[in-house]
Length: 146
Image (tube, rainbow, N blue to C red; front, top):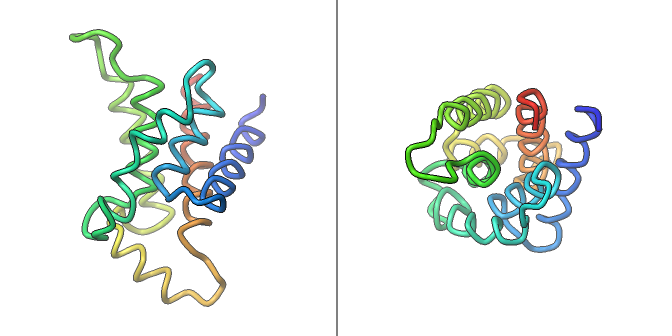
């Protein structure tokens, strides 16, 4: 499947997950694993991301849940299967996703992002942000051969 199609599919899945009641970290992690994970279980990884909502536990003080959920998905897809394996790929994927996320949203901090969203008048919200973040991560993964 082409990169653009995968990006759109990941974005749509993340948006729909959020729309159905999952939060940012859950929505992106499940969407990415569903789109890029082959046999991996998106519903299971979504549970691993549960505590990252709203800047970790709803505090809004730390990393944006959409970014954290994406990193959880990367770990699910490419993390070490045995201790001592080379983890350079996961470092590179995580770094590149973070770089693109910050380029798009101006920060990785939940509260800073929320403050920027509240200033917008176009109805942009966390649901849309999560969908865009899923698309960004899908591009990173596709470019790496996933």
